[in-house]
Length: 73
Image 1 (cartoon, one colour):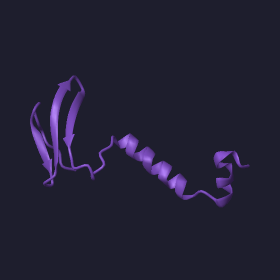
Image 2 (spheres, helix red, strand yellow):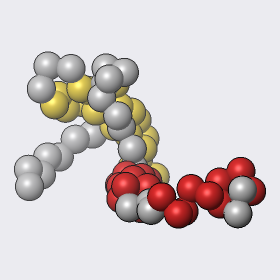
Image 3 (cartoon, helix red, strand yellow):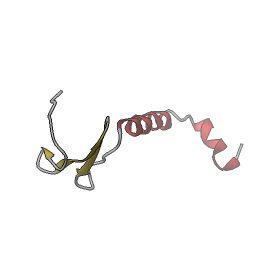
Image 4 (tube, helix red, strand yellow):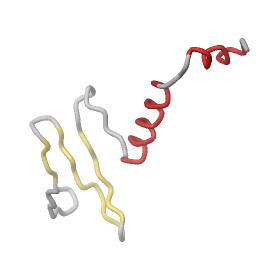
């Protein structure tokens, strides 16, 4: 893991297309601004993990499970 020190209004570059800027620091919280191309998804880690879990669950749907969709039991 690369660890960098930055002050408010300072940025780091990730590759050529992603800029992470320190927007604000209050106590133990840091607000980040992230500029990235629209084709690069940016999520908080807990949201990313939830998306991965849901995608895994969706990939394991059995044909019999689809009968419940739309109330056709």
